[in-house]
Length: 368
Ligand code: B12
Image 1: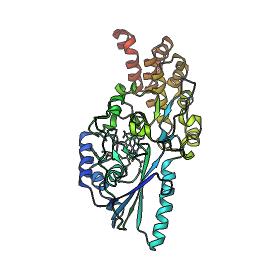
Image 2 (image 1 turned 120 degrees about the vertical axis):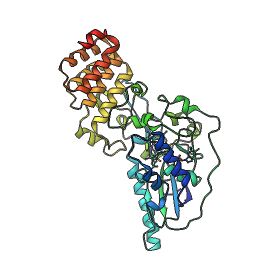
Image 3 (image 1 turned 90 degrees about the horizontal axis):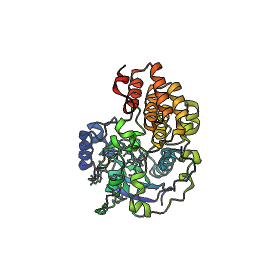
Image 4 (image 1 turned 180 degrees about the vertical axis):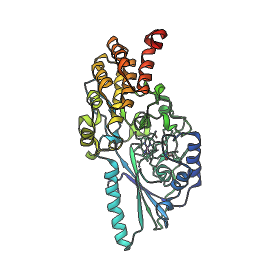
């Protein structure tokens, strides 16, 4: 154990051409089209010397965060991925890594370390796999023996020459549970993912969620854990037991969708700034709440959706609210859509209203 980590291994910091090529192939396929990555990024992420010019070793750490999803009795609640319902892991792990790195630097009387956890240009899974910390599963997450895939990764890149650990030879064999379960078909089965279809990515994007994928998102409002929840080695791993991985409160893991649909900036900062879902802003969460409410198919959500269709200041949110009302499709939902169509000034939202009404109305009325 090291600073709260469940496992530690060391990889060579030599540039990794296979990783660079895999990243480049993924970019060519458009798998990461929602991310600002390019071929220069692929080269940097495959070479730890982009973080520390003298890098010789990469200390790879896995921090387990598995925790049971709390139950709730209200149907109009959303789901938040485990990684985002507690205090922001970037800060928690960043502080731990910084503490260890400070001690190493002090020991050597100079700076011999650089840190990475999620936000730096380093292909963390690839270096973790190279170090034998775990293996890449068909859901593309690193699975650490005995810990499963609910592990955050963090790295200390160092100019010290440390003893290198060998990679593991384990793989998923014939198991394809994650592939068969993924509602959006994001996982290809060859250990690659089309991230533009991954529900985790859909909940984070700042533009419209593709219409054909909305109905498949269930009630996820931030991230998604489905592919890992069915992963056998992840299921067998013990719950982490570390209280810092528990939900901040019941709302953090299963927020009221009605409340989320009304969320404004001040409340967003108060509730979410301390979590890993505190960076995209309130409108993205309102949009996600609208899609989730549509997917409950519960007519009791209509008054809240109808109010949002009238009042939400953000056209993207109103557009997804229109979709949700169409998905519920009750008489009151259709009436709210028809009434708004008379007043809506944004052409994008008007388009969503028309598409939402289309299955219910003769074409001649919509053309009018
Ligand atoms: C962009 C990103 C995303 C995107 C794209 C995810 C993806 N699969 O590519 C989105 C938003 C979808 C996402 C979602 C999630 N993410 Co994310 N994400 C990242 C980020 C910032 C970059 C990943 C990246 O470059 N992807 C591009 C692909 C091509 O690269 P890659 O996944 O790293 O894959 C490499 C290795 O797998 C390697 N490889 C090694 N051995 C082998 C063997 C074979 C056979 C193959 C084919 C490949 C292979 O090849 C690939 C290219 O180098 C990393 C942090 C980082 N800097 O690395 C976190 C990171 C990968 N995410 C993380 C987490 C926790 C998640 C979520 C679980 C959060 C959630 N619950 O919603 C989901 C998981 C979804 C999923 N099934 O992947 C963790 C993963 C921990 C783990 N155990 O693997 C990371 C490492 C952050 C961290 N520091 O903990 N994420």
